[in-house]
Image 1 (cartoon, rainbow, N blue to C red):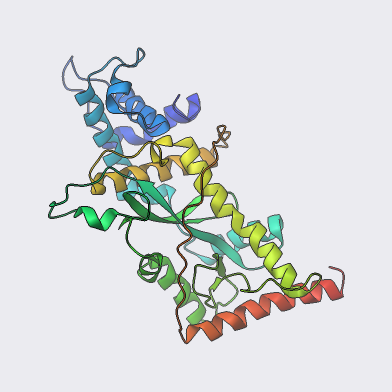
Image 2: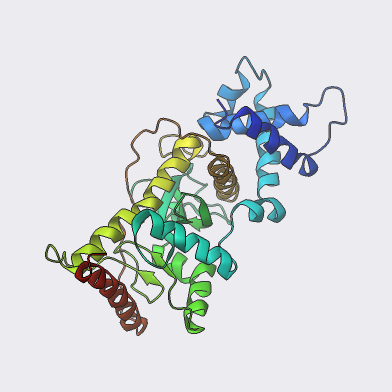
Length: 326
């Protein structure tokens, strides 16, 4: 019902307790019950009234709303969020992440896979000064456009959940702190670390994409494309698992909150997702999630040449493996 094991739920409650309001009155809900109410919403994504009517919780809809706001706020505190969602910040962690990808897929240098996903929200008021409705319209509905980066174990390394659904993927990437970090790594000659993205991303020396045209069979280029695809699928699995565990994020549920709070809910689910990965919580039975993010962008940029050189370097590694039957 809550997507967490009993032991992890207890640990989660202990982690949040310092950041929760203490029970001051006899009529107040205890912290455990408040946390469980929020967990049930994240896991099922049902309307607050449905949760309020649950025979195990038996609270009012307004109580559900307050519990969700309190727990979501606690999970978005920097000292909580940054403890669970963090990009490798030193060479020891970068190399550990790189080795995990290599051991699983044989692609050298990968420290993360990147993609976007949309989380449906209820349309804001057309005339709202802070959240104009038109900004949140994507091709099919209203949404938040979310950038995700994951590791080889499907743990979320970075999440950017603050842009309206109409925001172009390229804008989010170009304003990403991870792009700045990767650029700085390569400028300091640490050029053997890469992110993997699909063809919708601009090829860079630190962001490797597939070759545009499918190469001939039994060539290093074909091997590169093939292993790139099987490695990059990690981010699609990560996105599917995130939404499968926490069904408030799937497109059929729709978050009925203002955009700012919806973004906090997305972040909260990312924290819980990483807790589940860390504690080896089995994946739930997942319904198929459509890949709706086919909005590709291409830019002419001097860095494209550096990206091609980096990609060629990896292709040559695959060529040497073939020559020596490695």
